[in-house]
Length: 416
Image 1 (spheres, rainbow, N blue to C red):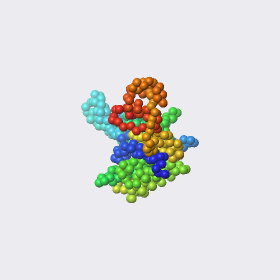
Image 2 (cartoon, rainbow, N blue to C red):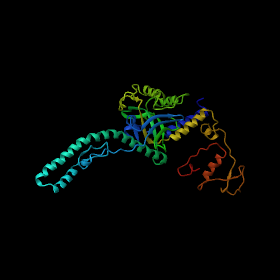
Image 3 (cartoon, rainbow, N blue to C red):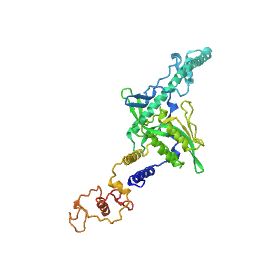
Image 4 (cartoon, one colour):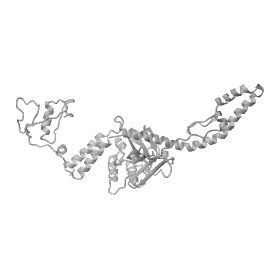
């Protein structure tokens, strides 16, 4: 059964998928990510940020309100020129304005006699110090409440920019936004070296939309398959990685399986435990969310956690892989294989093949007239000038399901 054309073609598609992968095992480091990146603890508890919103027929994983920045309370009007007050809650706290004090002293010198000037100047500085002491707690209270809001504002701005980048589909650097589940860490042994790995083991592609009425940003899972991210282990030749990847994918596709969601551990916990228990003899699965523990740094053994992360990354050949997967599903369903693909996995005949001559309009036939031959005259459509070798390929394709062509670069093989 394994050597049937159907199985051989299935294996050929597997081979194409593996050849199309371009995996750098050193690239699986969240700490080295250059694009958008937000870990769960950075988002939890932010004002205007909501998770896991379900309505009939819709599931929003993340919702971000459009908030406005709030300015700090104004200092007392009578002493506003004596303080330097910043509008950045992450910036420096208020301080006495030396320029403001000097300006007041200069004006005072013009009005006061010399015998009372020094006392008046000291009073100005004392007023500034007293105002700062009274105003600082007010500013600190504002900053403490404003910092989370500014984080939400920054999150909104980054997601808004990313939304337009994803929709533009820049051909030079196409990106995708994914929700990574099950962040794992490990210093993977490779020969005499180790490669640091810190990356989610399951990812779901996302889309960003905007509510035109409320201007809220909404992040939802795309209508694509959930991915198992074990390529980093496979690239490091970790024993059993390829088999684990297949087992994890089969688990996701099992009948009755619920869609993976980061908010329900029952949808992904079995896969994470499977990887942790079989990828490394000392591997562990840790539920860190409920304990408010961080993901441990890469160590000598694999640690798989239930933590999640949002990140943007260069878009891979997912579309090619999706096409290959769909073709394999059709093969498994028993679809009839067209003669062209079938010829790729069928042994050639031992009998000599005789093709009748086919004439193409415009082709020099060495004196024979048009319309001579069993095939008659046919139109040959080439967008560019063609040569005799290309015509020979077309003549054979007209009478065979496939033709093997060899030749040096620039001879028109791909063009044909």
